[in-house]
Image (tube, rainbow, N blue to C red; front, side, top):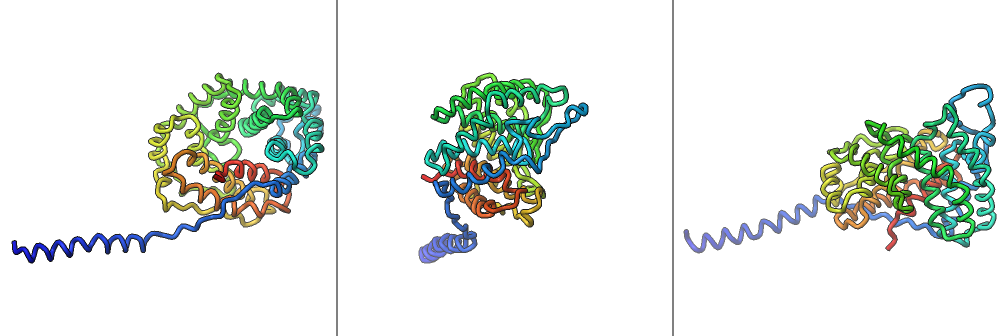
Length: 370
C-alpha cells in the first residue's frame, strides 16, 4: 500500500475517537448535585416538636384491634398505656425512638430533662407490663407484625446504645416487651413461607432489617441467625427487581431498595456486590436517576405516605452505597429525596406530622456528611 495513503488513513482514524468522545460527552445528561442535608441542633429542636406533639395525644386513634368481647372496648390509654398516642401503636413507638435518638445526639436539645421525664413516665415498668399483657391476649399474637415489632426493637437498640442514666432505667423497664418480640420473631420467621414485597407496613425486608440491627448491636445470635437464614431463603436468588413499578400510590417503603438494604446487612461485601448487580443492575450506572415520590395532598393520610417513601428510599440508598465507591452516586439521589420532603413535614397536618418526623430523623442519621 502506498505509504502516503497509509499515513492519511491513520490520521483520519486517530481523529475519530476524539470526535466520538466529544459526542458522547454532549449526550451525557447533567446530574443536578443536591445539597447534603444536615441534622444539627436547630433541626433537632424542630424535629423533636413532632413526637412531643403526639406521643401523649390520644385522639384521633386507630387501634387496629380484634374485639373478643365487650371487655375489649377500652380507651387507647388503657389498652396501651405506654404507646397510646400518635394515632396508632407503631407511630407512638417510633415517636419515642425519635426523642431517644435526638437526645443521644444532642444532649443540649431544648427541654432535654423534660423529655427524659416524659420517656420515663411513658415507658414505666407498669406501663410496659400492660403492653406485654396486651400482646399475650387471645386475639393479639400477630398484633403489629412485623412493622411495630421492628420499631420496638429499633427503640430498644437506641436505648441500649445511649450512655445515660435514664437509659438504663428505660432499658430495664422495656426489656420484657423487647424479649417478647424477639421471641415472636424467632417463632414466626420459619412459618413465613413467602416474603411480603409491599411498600407499606408488612414489608418483610424492612421488618428484618431493623430486627437485624437490634440483633447486631446486642449480639443476639439466635435472632441474627434466624433473620440471616430467612433473608437468604427469601431473597438470595432474586433478579431484576422492577424499580420502574415503584412507587405505588400510597407506598412509604420501596420494596426493591428495602430488600437491597437488608441484603447489604447480611452478605459479605463481594457477595453483595455480585447479588446487587443481578438484582438492580441499573444502580451501578453513574447517570442513574430516580424521581422522588410526588405528594399531591399532604392532608390525605394515605397520599402523604409518599413523603415517607422519599425518606425510606434515602436511608436504603445510603445503606447500599456504604463502603462501595462505585455506588457513591446513589447518595446524591438520596439527598434529593430528603430535600424534597423535609421542608414539608414541619407545620404539616396531623396525617403526616404524627409519624414523618421519625422517618426524617432516621434518613438524616444515614447521611454521610464526611
